[in-house]
Image (cartoon, rainbow over all chains, first blue to last red; front, side):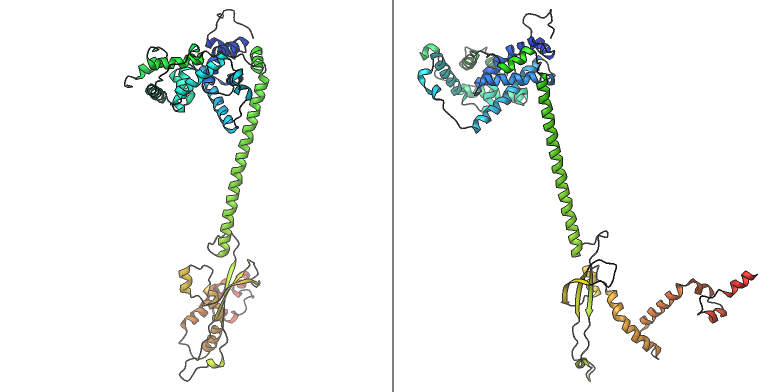
Amino acid sequence: MTSNPHLPVRPTLQDALDLARAGDPRGFEELYGQLAGSVTRFAHSRSAEDPEGLTNDVFLAAFRHLEEFDGDDDDLRGWVFTIARNKLIDDARRRSRRPRTVDAGVADADHITASAESDVVGTDWVHDQLEILTDEQREVVLLRVVGGLTVPEIADVVKRSIGSVKALQRRALRQLEKNLPQNPYPTDAEWR
Amino acid sequence: MSEHLNDEAVEALLSGHERDQPLGALLASIADHYGAIAPSDPRPELATFISTGGADAAAAVDLIGVRRRRKRAVAAALTGTVVGKMMIGVSVAAASVVGMQARGMVDVPMLPDTHHRTVVQQPEPAESTEPTPDRRPASVPTPVVTTLAVAPSDDASSAPIAPIVANTPPPTPVDAAEHHDLRYRPQALVDSSDESSHDGERSDDDGSDDDDGSDDHDDDAQHVAVDNGSSPEHTGDSDTADDADHGSDHDTPHPGRDHRDDD
């Protein structure tokens, strides 16, 4: 619980990890601040039902089992994304077993703001671009582009070899190159 | 078109350094789209955990305890299942062995045996079986052979349980040897049937016919030899003339010993 007076203003990920292991609330806060954004974005990109809630569950599980983690800051990102990936798989299975329902409030177009409509259109556009990829290719590309992980970290998350991850990346880019969109990403001005 | 996508080119595209290329622009658009999503604030449970610095570790410890208990329960269930299956397998195997033992397919020395006694009922020859003038019997009745399952008991006179085979031709020793019927004991049949023949032959032996039936004589000689051999007193004292006089009186002490004792 004692704070280090020599600690820099913005601790690195390794410092935050050391603080969290010591039980310092600043360590947990820093870990969440540095990693939660990429986890939430990755959850969005994987079409999670509640990306923010899933991110909350990921960090709650990670913090509770932090004593079992014995790696450094390089391994921490892969470990957190592994937890996120497992929770995304559970979320997808749970949704597949549940009958689909349409919320009347959301379906009503009058209640959708312009920015929300822009987000929906942009998300649909991105989904359309990635639709041609296989699930493994899509996951690897999103972990790289959205999650910001390196190839070894991705290999650790998806339980594949580095060569296999590189091959998946190469095939995904070739597939995307073959199907380059005629229309670029829609901007807000174009949408309006 | 895609021959230029080597490892370096792929790394440059995915790192966002090639935004001027169409494929790089597409990947950058995807990254920008999701990069605009702001991280959310932690929810109450996580916020409490962060603010207390993991002070609710008791809950985490309790969670670990629950997992350990669950693992123990799974291990116990697995062990019970394996042990139960092994017991069932051993029981089935034991029942099979006992069944085969009862059927006579195997012979396990440790298991109690169910005896099969073969009884040959030789019917009395009818009057019509008197030798005809050409010294041939008119008809020879077929002997009835009955195999009886006898419960294991020390009493030889125990009652049979149930007949198994009836009216089958009597097995010969050759057949028994071929079929490895270990329970077939032709010697018992021979003994039971030969007793009368021995008696008859003895009566014949008492007569003047000493040349035939040499085997029977050997049997009698063996019986005599066994009887004499079983008594050691006869072996050492049979060469004296006094023994001939006192041969039938086995209970009397040896006179020689008395003399030696007296000396």
